[in-house]
Length: 178
Image 1 (spheres, rainbow, N blue to C red):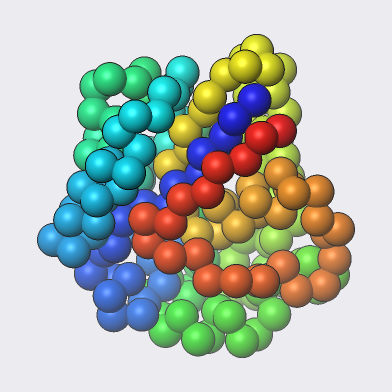
Image 2 (cartoon, rainbow, N blue to C red):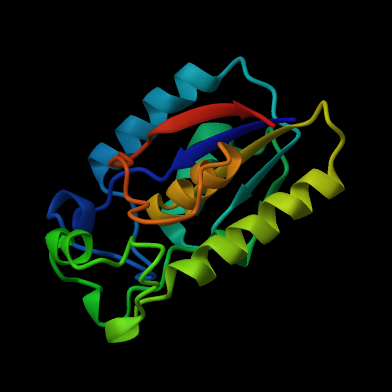
């Protein structure tokens, strides 16, 4: 099975370095432009289905990339990590105080515990593995935290310590064989 992960395009909150969490915000002009560029890169790719978060930034991204040429499905397991009181705050706060440490599993300030994030992502991966044949090609449009968790799970990384191993950029995509 081939899985293509895509992070949504840029929003105004992204451009300001602010945490969005589950805030339901649209793409900005740069985000739409970058999605158009990604569409051109992926235009010859075949996808059996596109799964996405129901937040508008992911919906817009998916519609720009695949439009109506691919069946799209909302899945609540792909929604961004709940960031509680950190929504709207500087990204540095989130990165620096241990919310990505799998061993700590922090839930301070209403942030969704990392074990919960990984659990729903694992559940989603198991679901698509069971639902689709091995020769399927699945596009997943989601958010940075979910993208990161799915990536760790797909690559069978050990779930321990700091799971924030790299920045996931807007409109970043990767293809995996599982």
